[in-house]
Length: 208
Image (cartoon, rainbow, N blue to C red):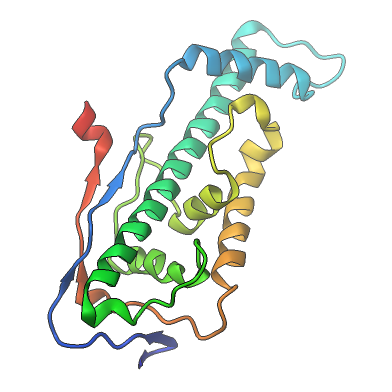
């Protein structure tokens, strides 16, 4: 095991660079009826008391609030899609490791999703994978995986409180990821980034 700074890296036999499966991501939120999402956001504004008592807002102001809420929701969907893509990529990487003798012993078999697989998420960061959505907002990969671990499917906007969309989704996703990642006994060993390569394919661009 190599130690660089405060991080530990597994020793990969040989010297060659291993090609991993491509990471297939969707950067466009999967929403078929945006008008329905806006309508549900309007309902959420009314039901969550976002409008102070004894104060009325004109329709333009209500629409501004709804659009802001929808923007937060679409960003949540983009994050969830990244997390879903990363977990599927990790599954494919597991298959690749299993079929290669020099990599087979680097992963310990366990019930999916095993916390030790967080080393693949760390690898994405070490390889400086660009993670921006169509809104140009950067995606926190740890948070994205945490949201996917929390939600098997992305709920509709009507299932959320405005507090979740504005403030809580980042902390929920990050806490879920950290809890998952730290379930494996220390030290968590990283994969040396110089020994692995892979392509990142934006499926949203390919479908447009």
